[in-house]
Image 1 (cartoon, one colour):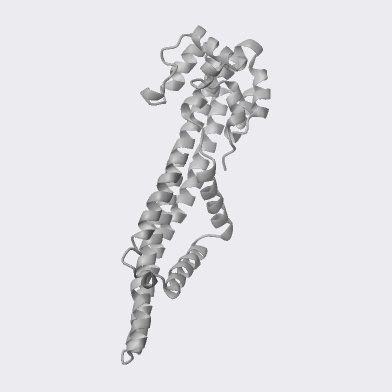
Image 2 (cartoon, rainbow, N blue to C red):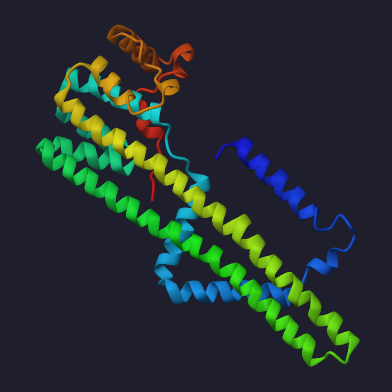
Length: 290
């Protein structure tokens, strides 16, 4: 997420929160009993559904969701093209050094398998199996948050029932009625807000990031195979960019000499060319993904 996304989140969340207090009855929306019923009930249900280790992994994925954005797809394509040029000059074994420099674990693994000399079928099978298991792990974590989003409103209704029962128990006392009605009314509110402003957005954010990372893995898996099969970086660029949207295909109309010139400009530190193309030094800019 970029800076503008965070600004929008903080601003709109502030407006949403202020809307509860704009009438001057802020105290009516704060009830610790109702909050404890919803939060503790949801957490207890989650621990009954999933092991503590899986819940810890879900929290780590959530933290990385907002701290470590995935690399842009066109940056991955440009990196693979830089590797292809490097391979043409120094051979496939030279990729081992680039793999050691990379902090993107899937790219490091793919280059290691390529250098080990695996057949194309074996290399493709291993990488796609890893992508499959990665998708399954993320789908499980996404399901956890969607399940929490279902639990929270349910415990909100439970808190409402608790408040109504307490109210009936003290129906002859106006003070008891005034004390228990807030529990009955705020518990469903807390459950709905938690589900729709926290759990569902996190689940959808995990899903969106997973799709972007799977596209990155697809580009890397296809790229390492094409580096071996396709000696021409120009054709390699066309094949890889076919997986991108038309607006992201920056190398579509470039010749091989133009690609080389831009990569030389990157290596020379030219500020004019640094922005549109990412060379093999971009490997050091990628962050490891859980």
